[in-house]
Image (cartoon, rainbow, N blue to C red; front, side, top):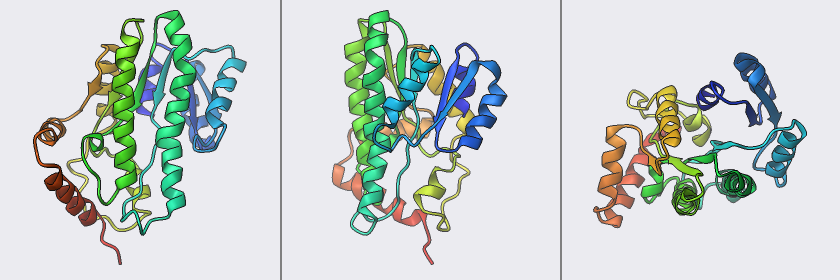
Length: 243
């Protein structure tokens, strides 16, 4: 929502998501510059359907923001394999499909770009939320590679990699279980969006909001991976108090 508000200051926007009522409300707020198409990006064929919906309105994708995603907290062997694979359908497959669909036009026009929502998780092992962390590592690696490929064609590829943000992500990740984690230190969604959007327009490869998050990423490059894995595991398991 916050990224759409920023984009709509200068561009027409195409909003998508599963909640049709929320899309209608946001489109109404943004006014005549906003279009919407409700779909579940985890469903096979949905990304192509979204691109077709844009074409039907006479629009092309100048800038693509891949923000959809979800994760599941818990031991990988105990969580539903089907749900974990469904998260990859959204976090990895749909992101890749939309990016590959939009890039040829951007490259041909020599303008535009892709803003991918990554995470500090991309730089760490993730016991306790393993599939999500692995998916974000993929997003980071893909984005960095495409950044180099696209730079000479005037196209920007940026990864926005925050830590915890005040959204509904954690409630879904824990399936509503009582959280023991304070949200005091979670970043504000509007501020994360602002930093990400400004970094994207400036052509940065990666934007990491928050000094603490930047310190974590710096330490991840030098700390032993075994130590990092155990530290993340303790944090994830302490997040939720299960009754």
